[in-house]
Length: 210
Ligand SMILES: Nc1ncnc2c1ncn2[C@@H]1O[C@H](COP(=O)(O)OP(=O)(O)OP(=O)(O)O)[C@@H](O)[C@H]1O
Ligand SMILES: [Mg+2]
Image (cartoon, rainbow, N blue to C red; front, side, top):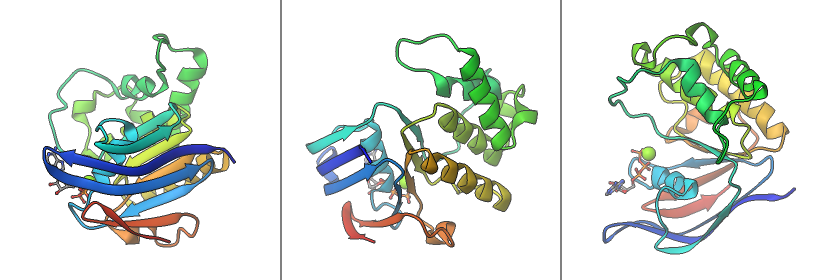
C-alpha cells in the first residue's frame, strides 16, 4: 500500500504560542485514523496543518495533492447566492481545470444522493439547516474522489441516520484506497467502528497511538 501522508516532528505556533509540538503521523492507502482529545488540544490545528492551511514552524509534511478537507463547522455568514449543486460541484475542481465534465456532474449527483440531499440540489445554501449544510460539505468532499479525506468533527450536528450514512460512505472510500483522517472530541461517535487507529492528543502533543 502506498503512503498518502507523512507528517514528521511537526511544530505549529500561533504567534509565540505553541499549538502543536513534535507531532508525527503517517497514513497509507485505506487507513482510517481517528484523532481525539479535549477542546483546545490541537485537533483542528493538526488538520489545518495537514491541509496546508497553517505553516509548520519546524518539521516536514508530505502528502498527496488529491485531498478533500471539511473544516469544523462554525456558524457564520453564508448568505451568498449559490445552490447546493453548485457548492457540491466545486469539490470536483482540480488545478487548471475550470470546467465540469459529465463525469464530474455524475460524481456530484451520486454524492448528493448518497448523503440524501438530492432533493435540495437547487436550494440556495442560505436556506439550509446546519445539519443539511454539513451534508452539503461532506458531499462536496466525497465527490472529488480524494486520496486523502480530512474531516474535522464531521459528526457534530448530524442525526443518527446521517451519521450511519457517513460511515457507510467512508467504508466504501476506504475500500477503494482512500485514507481518512477524522477528528472527533466525542469518542462515542466512533463506538462500534472497529477498523481504524485512534490517536489522542493533549496540549499539542500526541499522547497515544492505539
Ligand atoms: N487562530 C488562532 N489564533 C491563536 N490561537 C489559536 C488559533 N486557533 C486555535 N488557537 C489555539 O490553539 C489551541 C488549539 O486549538 P484547536 O482549535 O486546534 O483545538 P481543538 O482540539 O480543535 O479544539 P475543539 O475541540 O474545541 O475544536 C487552543 O489553545 C486555541 O486557543
Ligand atoms: Mg477543533
